[in-house]
Length: 229
Image 1: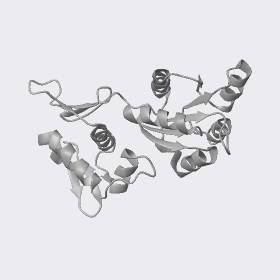
Image 2: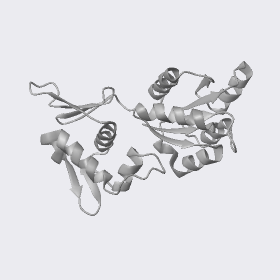
Image 3: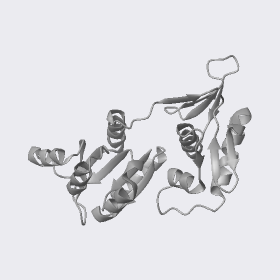
């Protein structure tokens, strides 16, 4: 899950980014409204939730909401604000915000509200994806091989392995390039080692054992997940 965080307070932004990353989210953090708008203009569809501070340099969080809704973009938005008056909340909700969190807030509540927004989102992904004898349990973040059979086994996945396998299973028979993998597994601006994608692929294939060969290397292009017929 990829989140666009727009927060100009450095300490709060770092704290939120750290908590979300620890929970397995990919976070693109903008410290101004204009920077957040740049992320949205680049590709708003890659985000599942936006977390916007109301008072941002440049465009405000409210203006970002209006920008989204004027373009009929349904990205769920959680507004962070010190404004707790009813009339302020009405302004934000009318602008297109889906939920509010008044500062100061607990990180546990932030995570709970994000889970609720995801469930209500039309883009919400199923908690399980199954192709052939490989099932991905998105709640537990594990792969289940031979689900429901005597030989069923649970494969523990790291955060990156889970995100990678989910992406492949959501795009069967499609060529996935190295850049596409980087965009899915790392925040914009991150600079992983040049061989990191190949290393992640080796680890994932090894964990999938007999099903590792379902992920084919398409030389010079990328990778392709070939589900069994």
